[in-house]
Amino acid sequence: MRLRKKKALQENTATGIISDVDLRSPAYKIVYGCIIAILIVICIFTIFPTLWIFMSAFKDMKEFLSVPPTIIPKSFEPGKVIEVWKIARFGTHLKNSAIIIAGVLICSVVFNGMAGYVFSKLKPLGSGLVYKLIFFTMLLPTSMNLIPLYAEFVKFPILGINLTGTYIPLWMMGAISAFNILLFRSFFNSIPTSIIEAARMDGASDFGIFIKIILPLSKPIVMVVSIFAITGAWGDFLWPFMILKNEMLQPVSVMLYNIQAQLSADKYMVVMMFSIVPPLIIFLCLSKQIMGGVTIGGVKG
Image (cartoon, rainbow, N blue to C red):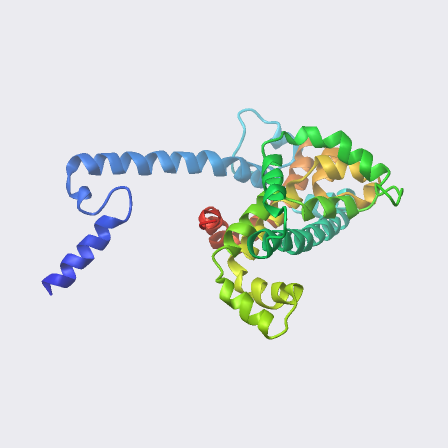
C-alpha cells in the first residue's frame, strides 16, 4: 500500500510546472493563483472580439452606433441574417472555399507526403542536397516569391497557358510546402525500415508501399498536416485575390474584403459572423488533434 502511494506521489510530482507537493506551500499557492488569474484575463481578451461580432450582428444600426455601446443586444433582427446571406452570396463563396480547401488538402498530403517518403526512406543520389535546399527556402521571406510565381501562373512554363482564373495555382502551392515535407520526413523516420523491406520482398512497388503501408501507419501526421492545410487555405487572402478575378470563383476571405463597401457596419458584422462559424466548428471537432500538432514535429529525425 505504501509503495502504491509512493509511486502515485512520484507520478504527480513528475508532471506539471507546479506539483501537488509544491501546492502545499502557501507561496506556491499564491503563484498558482496568479497564473490562473492571468490565463483567465488572456482568455477573456481573446474571446471578447468574437463574442462582440456575434452580439453586434443582431443589433440594428441605431443600437450598433450607440454610445456607450451595449454588449447584449436590446434589439434583435434575425431577418437581417437571411438578407445578408443572399446579398453576400455567402453560399457560393463558401462552396468556392470548400473546393480550394479540398484541392489544397489532397495536394498537401499526397505530394508533400511523397516528398517526405523519398527523403526519409528512398534517399536517391543527391536527395540530401535537395532536402537542404528545400529547408533553406523556409528562411526566405514569402514576399520574394510573389512576382516570380505570379509570372509563372500567367504563362506556365513549357505549356505556355494562363492558369489565373482557376483554382489550379492555389492547389499547386499547397503541394509544395517545406514545412510539411519536414514534418512528414521526421515522422517517417520513426517507421521501421524492416516493414518497407518486407513489402519489397513481396513485390510491392515504392508507390504501392507509400499508399498501402506508409500512409495508413501515418494517420497522426496526416491529420496534423490536414489541419494545417484546412486552416491555411481558409484564411489565405493574397493569392486568391491575385489569381481569381471572377467574383463568382472567389472564396470567403476575398469576399469579405470586396463586400465591405456595399454593406452597412451592422450588416458587415453579420458577414463576419458567417465567416467565423466554419473554422469554429472545425476547431471544436479537431481541437485535440490541433493541440497535438504542436509536438508532432518533435519526432526524432
